Amino acid sequence: MENEAKKRILSGIQPTGSFTLGNYIGAVRNWSSLQTDFDSLYMVADLHALTVRQNPAELRRHTREAAAMLLATGIDPQQSILFIQSHVPAHTQLSWILSCNTQFGDLSRMTQFKDKSAKHADNVNAGLFTYPALMAADILLYNADLVPVGADQKQHLEMTRNVAQRFNNLYSPTFNMPEPYISKTGAKVMSLQEPDKKMSKSDTNVNGFVLMTDDADTILRRFKRAVTDSDGIVRAGDDKPGVTNLMTIYGSLTGKDFAAIEKEFEGQGYGTFKEAVAQSVIDTFTPIQAEYSRILEDKEYLDGVLAEGAQKASRIAERTLRKVYKKVGLLQL
Image (cartoon, rainbow, N blue to C red; front, top):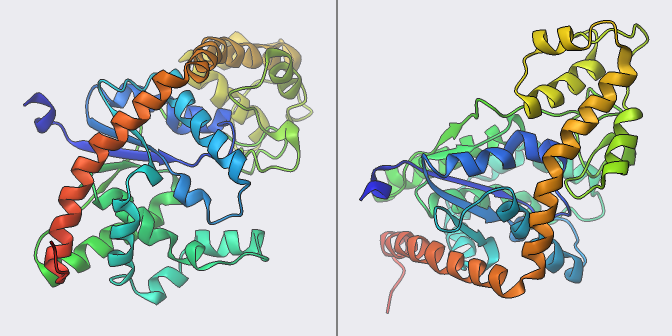
């Protein structure tokens, strides 16, 4: 009964290779703490990854690795439902219904479609265009109350709300109206080489990002090469984007605010500061990497968690789908 009183939260991440430090600080590390306060569902969004051409063997491997990393960062399958999106067929089934209730003009205005179309001009596919309908299905299948979102996902959540409202008005109340959940501890991590851009593993400059699977030497080397400025003072400010980004990372991992960081490194220069930031990342990732390796090697355990997660998610999703099918007039056996 206690679980029923909790608000439901749903979040997902694509299996496009190892998570970055930005993924960890901005989202993933918060999910384990959310599961104590919310009825939590966490999804590896492998279907969404197909909007860009994938190597099949790599996609399968990355999907398992993503699930293992979520478990390693503290997702507890006894508290939360962890599942692979494609293991729950209701996602694609509801996506078609919602596509038929989503306006072409709304989809054409989505900024992510425009951005990805420019990046992948040789593969501007229909799935990339209707991606928001699948995202809406992800959320509405579980009648999620809250969805953790970053700035680049607010537009998708707004469209989900619009689709839900349109459906509710046409067919009677069916879906919850999901609200954005903005984490108090999340922070936006920028590229180590171009601090005006978000950290991304698709960056052509490998020194711009740090992966959760990087070894200590790689992490230290990339932070030593991080862009700062010429004045040598550890201080936050709009005029110091590189230093501010490093301070954000350090503060996120140590719990120190900017004032405390400025005092700690007063008069010490950037070399000492960069090494300290790197060490805070290494100290955070080392135990996670050990647990990640252990889980990946235990195939029976990982497969069991994913099978159980798919069953639990399917039970919730199929109840919603049956209700939707009946309301739109599909004949059910």
